Amino acid sequence: MKVSLAEGSGFCFGVERAMDMAYKYAKEKKGKELYSFHEIIHNPQEVLRLEKAGAKHVDSIAAVKKGSSVIVSTHGITQKEEELLRDKCASVLDTTCPYVKKIHRIVKKLTAENYRVVIAGDAEHLEVKSILGYTAGNGVVVSSVKEINSLDMKEKTGIVSQTTQNAGTYNAIINGILEKAFLNRCAEVRVFNTICDATKNRQKATLELAKKSDIMVIVGGKNSANTRRLFEISAGILKDVYHVEGAKELKKSWFKGKKSAGVSAGASTPAGLIDEVVMKIRKIGDDK
Image (tube, rainbow, N blue to C red; front, side, top):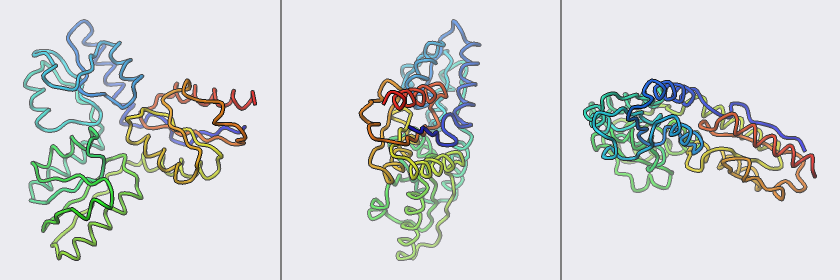
């Protein structure tokens, strides 16, 4: 059985940068009270590894001791959360992805200029929550074209997306909002392309590989938005698509009668985990 890996699979620039910063910081703070505020990336193995390095994972500012040090998730946090952490902690390491920071700046400027900000993304995702925190209560999250129907259009609207949004979904949402704005005679709509290049390239590579494969295996955290997008893209092409966090979840029965297997992985998936999955699939193929 032929096994192929989608180009660009695994750690993206933002994730690699965040993890390098976090481990260096944990080493500097060894023996001191150190926390990781929210999962630094959406990968359980890496979250556990950072805890072993000394950074205790917490999801509330109340759980952070005064005078301690804290690592901020690569997904970013709200303005209010940052203010509270900097007031409470002796030091704060901000690993927020530069592409997410760029969206924060865009949204902050739009808000200052009285634009209603529409964020295309998952409302419960940490990145989206952090972006929403820069809208001063004048933002709304839209996850699908269907949700545009209930959207209350304002005179001035600015549209941004989660960095890991599906490009096709974002385009559909943009077109839907533009159509509604036209019908409601809204004065202005500004659109920003905030899907990161690594995400777009990975999605494209996954789509092309799915077209040439009998089965696709997507590797990454079950709570990873960008990994879920890869699954959705593949599922639009193939019936046999599986999302796993590691090689142990693979089942021989999935590959029965298959001649080609494609593998793709999210931006927060370590290279070691991807290699393990690829090797196990090859072993399953050899044993058939």
